[in-house]
Length: 542
Ligand code: ACM
Image 1 (cartoon, helix red, strand yellow):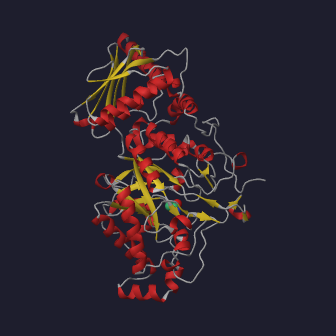
Image 2 (cartoon, rainbow, N blue to C red):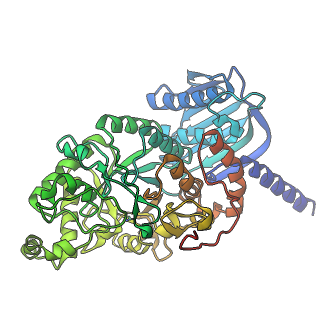
Image 3 (spheres, helix red, strand yellow):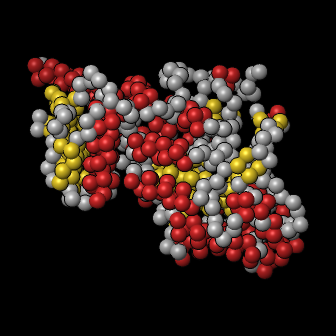
């Protein structure tokens, strides 16, 4: 009985001290002990003498310096906080072990990336004020004694941003990357081209800048209102700006995946280069309304030359293994009505226009593969047969992902009902205008990326999960943040934490402190009481 009582007390103690830890995403293993270590003015941060490790130590010193008013000194080797290169293969590429005792803090990892994630956890063990951009007085900078071993569940943990429908400035893109890294996510999917604007400089095709990046006006209110604001709109990243973002992301261990849409969602490009479309004589205009356009790339040799030239510059710029080619929502009307497209279908012995979509995707896959990269695309790339090296991003539910994994193709899960962060997150009449749909925080949190239908072998092809942020209705960075956070915080935990470690009640408690962190970071997150259940009302009441 006594022994039972002792175990009970330990469990309660562990539970209550666990509840104080407030780490998001929740680590895989945590053991707490009584006591705490205190950060002092003379605290030193030690790290191996390697550029990447030293950089991680420097970032920690810089953040501590901002919030406490005194940046710790960084030293080679041992410090009071020490980053240690470990040979423990169970930590894999991204895991870390964090030990806090009376002697100080040790973060062990196989890689600097793992150490970076250990540092994120250490920051979350400190009071939320540590995220302040300026010194906060009167805070006791303590860290509870703890032993953590933490390894992510999935290798791919991403967040996408559409900058075509609304352009987002470089500083905001960097802040977005900061938040991805804070949440131990590792992929930033940058949706750079679409019907309503082409946003990346391609030196060989200068009119993508002078024509395709500009539209006459933008839809106002809901699509059903069919109203326009009459205000010209434009935005564009130079290759120098992109290089700057890529360096910033690399320093935070975030891979940036560029997306160049094809063969659909091509209207902005056609506005500058009409010869790549169905009718070279047509005056195409960069899209001003939302939705899917019938004007798509016509798969002539000239079009392939354009796409391959564009991809060559993109591949030269972006070090990402994955290159996203879109592939979604390509209406087949023009191909069905085109003498050229029909002749090509016949010549290549294809079944129909869907076969032609597959032909386009397979050629592009071959091109990207020959450049040593991997093609990734939305699940429509399954149409007419999947090309050999393709990775599928399953967005129209999970069926595409399941079919691809069964064919032993890699998959990133992005089913719209759980991860589309442009959906309403609360009762629509209480919210600024959004595209529609309803996905609240609890629903995003509840997502299980590995479908039960898959065998263990097939399930290995589920690389991970990503939140998608389409910006038709998000005109400003502040609105993007309002829609993204904290639902993307929930998705970060879906991607990182073991399945049996997830619990929404527990997450909600940790979110209370996490919201303070987001406050210090100046994030305009959606701040409604997070346990409130909202009804979805559609259309919006006026
Ligand atoms: C998509 O939402 N069209 C990928």
